[in-house]
Image (cartoon, rainbow, N blue to C red):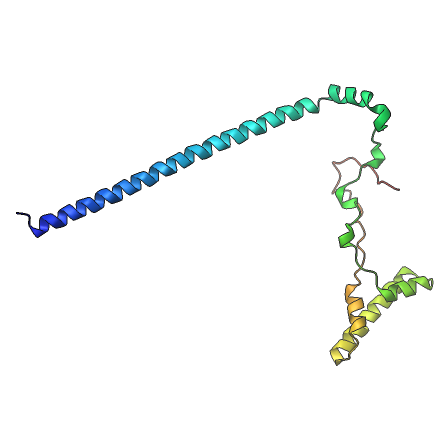
Amino acid sequence: MLKTFDLVLIGVMTATATVTYTIKHRAELKVEEVHRLEAEIKLEKDTIDLLKADWALQSQPNRLERLVKAYNEELKLQPTESTALVHAKELPMLKSEVPVPDVTEAKVSAKGATVASAKSATEASAKSATVASAKGAPDTKGAQATAKAQPIPVPAPRGEAEDADQIETGSVEE
């Protein structure tokens, strides 16, 4: 006759067999996934190598020279002059980065004032707007106009130590 202890042991063995089978099945699925990912990685590496080889063929100087000669009439290509090369920091700002001009600055500039007096007028209007807003005055248009006005950044001159190992090329003028 089966005793209670024997039934408990049979239940435990059945549960451990089920858990073992489940773990084994999950491990096999993970191994298949690893093999699939390794195959995808190999395919991508092979594709990259193929594209690099294709780029090397497409950018051969002899081939490019033949193309330039063949399409010179249509394209009218010119060699790049050394004065046409600039550094990224010398390029103009994006339109989205250009600050909105201040109305008071434009009026002062239109009267023939110098840039220094225009800056001092802008600073004075900014100070007066700050004082007015601190006092609780309802003049918010002036504060908004001066809040939008920002100084226009100017490219920094190249330092001797910074670009000592680079070739000095000049800038492009239109």
